[in-house]
Every structure is written in structure tokens, then in C-alpha cells.
Amino acid sequence: MDALGWHDLATATQGRLCPSPAWGRAARIVTDSREVQRGDVFWAIQGARFDGHAFAAEARQAGASLIVCQASAAAQIPGQKLVVDDTQAALGRLAHWIRQRREALVIGVTGSVGKTTTKDLLALALGQQFQGLKSPGNYNNQIGLPKTLIELTDEHEFAVLEMGAAKLGDIRQLCDIAAPEIGVITNIGQAHAATFGGVQNIARGKGELLEALPATGFAVLPGDDPVLRAMSVRARCRTLFVGTNADHDVRATAVAMQAGRLTFRVDQQSFDIALPSPALLTNALLAIGVAREVGVPLELIAEGLQEFQPVAGRGALVSIGPWWVIDDTYNASPASVRAAVEHLAATAITHPRARRYAFLGDMCELGELAAREHREIGSDLARLRVQGVLAYGSHAKDLASGALSAGLRSGQIAAGESLDVLLTVLDCWLEPGDVLLIKGSRVMQTERVLEWLKLRALQQTVFTPRQCA
Image 1 (cartoon, rainbow, N blue to C red):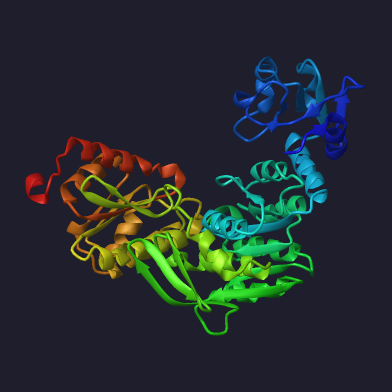
Image 2 (cartoon, one colour):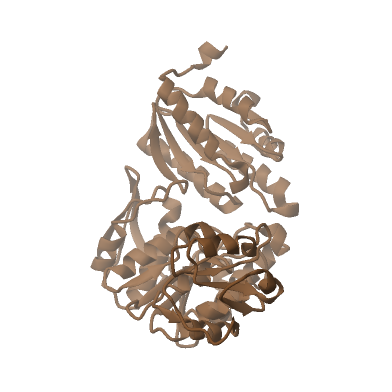
């Protein structure tokens, strides 16, 4: 970020310096007291599970020159401070103040699944011709997005911002801060259905991005999704559609998977990207659509996307000991699980002799849809003829029921809430060369299965079904 004077901070946040008058400059703003360096501004965020005000003394000791705090806690914080009504809201006001004073093109990316991948692809495509920044990791909420925007400088020509939401109004609030000129929606699924109050509200919530775009901007949407096509009328600006049909503005042809890479053509340009699943074609096309529309030549976009590397836990096919593992442990929703299961089935092309297994933890925050969605995933697994399913969590029986009803035998299914028991079954099933999908919602911590596999690989012992009998 560009250095800001304390009085600029006060103006932007509608806060009050205490004591006053006070002079100083902020080169860095941090919200984690453990990261404070001498001269930093420590922003005390009060959240649902933590309160930064409790760490103000620690931040001061580490060298913070200014503490941003709420009026309700100001009396307990000695030294120079900036007092605001609400530190989270004030962070958003500062981010908007900075955004309004920069020329960067701001692009908002939302959707139920694939936001981070699309954001990363888009930053690579634009970065071939322009200088910019993107949301680090999944900084996509009312704290993470402002922290990204604060890093904008006059040198940046674009900012790609991931926008997450758990309820109606979340995207609108992020758009009020970021004022995006371009909007991208990856898809509409059941993620956070419980907190949104149903799938219809998810569509309404994601569509808040379209409503926030100016008439001079544009949106890029998957053209094969009828829900998103219908939502496009909510935008005052032009809408571009991407997909594989002839009527799309950006159309992919000659689509193929080769050794863990997705290849296709747009117009006469070939693309070769390290995307682990054909389901991610839409994400690549969304990035191409934005970059081409703002003037990046297709050959440069292709060069940029060739540099993409899958993030750990987001679907990469990796080798662990004698097994192949689809590491999709970051999170799970019905749409992302279906895509992962299709990825597992697609490995029959590259690993024709391998047996395919799925270890699936619960998909959380689905509310009244949970039982049905888990049964449908079980049915999908049976339809795609996997050799075995391990279902973990409180909805394991629902998933198992769906798999049984669709044709899997009981001996091909293990379900329960004990991770140790399921790992014992997995130990009996896996043989060298097998492919295993691991996926589950964040709270299920399915990465523990990965760690178990790595340990088993180090032990250099693989138990076959005969040894376990």
C-alpha cells in the first residue's frame, strides 16, 4: 500500500485521533498482532470468535505506532489511537476511500464453486499485459476483501477480488466497498444453502454482483447455466457468455484431458492448462472472456494461463507412495463434489487399470437439503462405477443409502463417524496404482486422510484385501 497519513486514515474511516493533534504515517496496516512490526498500524477487529482489542497491548509492545479501536474499548487502550464506531466497518470505509482514488480496473468474482481458481486464472491472463493484484488465498469476506483493496497503489492497473457470501446482502456489501466494474459469476450451487435460506436466495445473493455493475462495465457468465442466463437481466451492462455452444461469445472447441492438463481451442488459439478436471473448463473460459474483452491478445492469454499451478487441496492429482490421490480436501459443496467425482471417473482414461475409490466427508451448511444432496452424491458415485466409497460424518448413512439404491454393493461401501475405522477399511482396500478421491467440507478435516496416506507410504507396506481378510 502507499503510505497514508494518520489524518487521511481519520478522514477515510470517519474516526477520531486521540490524543489530538497527532501526526504520523502508516506504511502497513495489520490485523494480526503477531505480524506487527515497528511503525505499523494495528487494526483491532472484533469478530465472532476473537476480539483484536484484547491484543492491543501486545501489538503496542511489538512496535505499533497507532491502534485503531472501537469507541467502546478506547478507554482500555493507552497511547495513540484512532477511535471509530466499528473497526470492521471502518476497514471497509478505508478500502473504499482508497479504491476511489486509484485508476485500477476492479473485477469481482463470485459463485458457489471455483471462485479462487477463476480469480487465479484471471490474474494470470491479465498479468501478461497489465500490472495488478488479486485477493490472496481466499480473502473474500468483509475483512479479507478490504485488506486486499488497501494494497492498491497507483502502479496497479487491475485488481481481481474474490467475493464470498453466506447470506443475502453479503455480496452487495462487498460491492459497496469495491465498486467493481466487471463481474464474473462461476456458478450457482447449494453451498451455504442453510444460511442463505434456500437455493433461490443463493441465486439472488450472487446476483447482487450483477446489480452493482455500472452501465459502462460488463459481466461474464457461463452460458450453459440456465439460471445464470436468466439472471443476466439484472445487469445494466453488457453480458458475455462462455461455454462450448456455438452461440457463446467465448467458445471452446477440441476439449481434451491429457496427463492432468486441460487442452482446448478458442478461435484459432490453442490452450494447455494444468487444470486437473474437465469441469474447470468454464473457469478458464471466464478468465479468457474478461482478458480478451479488455484487450489482451489470445496468444498472450494462453501464455499466461500456461503458468497456472493448482493450489493444494483443490483437485490436483498427486502421487503419494504407490497411489494416485485427487487432493480436493479444501472444502465441499454438492456442485464441487459432483465435479470431483467426475474427475475421479475421468482418470479411467489416464489410469485405465486403476481401481477408483472415494473418501467423502460431510457437505456442511446445507440445511434441510443435506440428506437429499448426500443421497444424490451416493447415486452419482454408483452411476460412475467407482470400486468403493468411504463416507465420513453425520450424513454418511445418507450417502451410503444413495449409493446402494443406485447399484453399489454393500461390500463396496463403508460409512460412519469414526475416522479410524474408515481408515482401517481404506487400508484393506487400497492396492498399488489405485486412485483415491479425498474431499469434504472444511470442518471435516479430510486432509487427515492425506497425512495418513503419507505415513503409510513411508512405512512402505500396503495391505491388500487378502491380508486384511
